[in-house]
Amino acid sequence: MIVRPPVNWLRLLFVWRGSVLPAILPQLLLMLFVSTVALETGGRIAGAKLPLDTAAFPLLGVSLAIFLAFRNNASYQRFTEARLCWGQLLIAARALTSQAISCFAAQPAALNQALFQRRLIAVVYALKHQLRGTDPMPELAGLLDAPELALLRGRSFLPVALLDAVRQMLVQAALRPPARGEVLMVLDRQVNALGAAVGACERISSTPIPYGYGVLLHRTVYLYCFLLPFGLVDAIGVATPLITVFVAYTFFALEAIAEQVAEPFGTAPNCLALNALTRQIERSVCEQYGVPMPAALQPDAGFRID
Image (tube, rainbow, N blue to C red):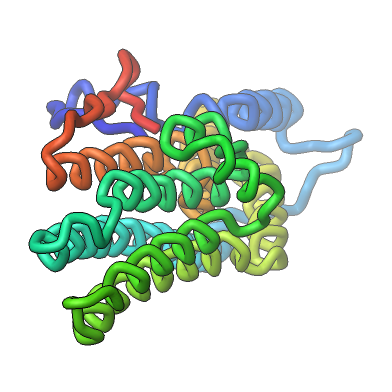
C-alpha cells in the first residue's frame, strides 16, 4: 500500500509511485500509436473509411462509465470488508490478551502467558501468509519451538490449528481450580471472534469477483478505445491522439485500480499493507504483556508499506 502525506494539487498531478500509470503505460503508448495511424490515414483501414460517427461515442462512453463504476464499487467493497476483518483481528487480539492477563493474574501457574502470547501472534502471521500464499515457517520459527512447528508443517489451515492450540490452553487453565467455567465463556467469546475474522478473510480470498465481469469490461474498454480515434479524427483532427490517450487513460486506470483493489490481500501498490497490520497487532499484544515491542514498519523511500 502507498501511504503518502498530503500534497498540494500541483504535485499530485505528477505523482508516479503509487499511481497505476506505470502499469498501463504500454497500453497508453499503443493507443497513441493507433490514434496517430488514424490521424495519418484520415480514419481509414486498408484504404476503407470507417463509417463512425461521434454521436454514438458519448452514449457508449456513459454506459461504459456506469459499468466501470459498478466494477469499482464491487472491488472496493471487498477491500473495505478485508480492512474491517483485520480491524476485528486487532480488537479481538487486544481483548483476549487483556482478559487472559486479568483472569489468571491470581493464579500465574494456570496459564503459560509467554507461550500464549507467542501463539496468539503466530495466528496473525499464519493468516497473513495463508492469504498471500507464502511460506509462514521462517516467521513462525521465531515464535514457536521446533516440535510445534513440526506438527504444524503441512497443515493447510495454520491459523485455525493455532487458534485450536490457543483455545486448548485457555480451556485447561480455566478449568483448573479455583477458576470457574464462566471465565472460559468470556475467553472463548474472543477466540470465536478471532476465528470469525479468519473465516471472513478466507471467504474474501477464495471467492473473487465473477470472471465474466472482468472479461466483459476488459473487452469493452479496449474495443471502445481502439474505435474512438477513428470516430474523432474528422471532428477534432490533430487533437485526436491527445483526446484519445486521455480518455484511454481514464478507462484503463479505472480498470487497473479495480483489479488491484479486488484482491486486497495481494502485494500490489493499492492492496492492504498486511505486513504493517500484522506488526501492529504484534506490537499491541507485546505492549499489553510489557515485553519489548518490535519496531513499527515504516514506508520506504517510495512511500510504500507492505
